[in-house]
Amino acid sequence: MKTFVIRRRNAWKNAAELEATAALSMRIGNEEMADEVRWIRSYVVEESDGTLGTVCIYQAVDDAAIQKHAARVGMPADEVTAICNTVIVREDPLSVADAA
Image 1 (cartoon, one colour):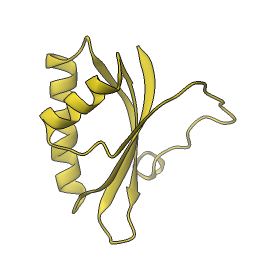
Image 2 (spheres, one colour; image 1 turned 120 degrees about the vertical axis):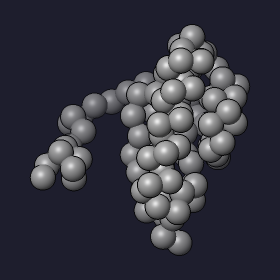
Image 3 (spheres, helix red, strand yellow; image 1 turned 30 degrees about the horizontal axis):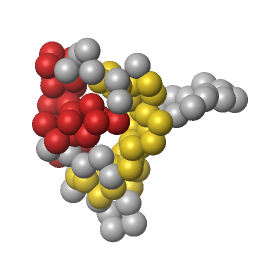
Image 4 (cartoon, helix red, strand yellow; image 1 turned 135 degrees about the horizontal axis):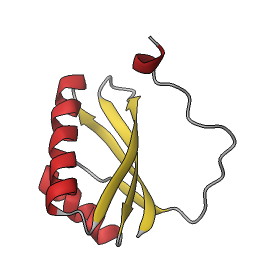
């Protein structure tokens, strides 16, 4: 599988909507498309209009599988870019929830 970064802009009005979509995404990815896509992590970002977007890291057989997964979940995949290398300077910091 290849590794991809996916930008999903202005996709959710609030955290509850995002959580519901995440649950569906995980179910479809793990149960129905496990041989095509694998969700690694997501970073939630507040967009300039107050909605929520994400920057997601996935592994997939190709970008078509990413688009197929997004369509089945009902979420955007505005930009899908293959990652050619990873440079880790530091591990991801603890999330706000983990730090509390």
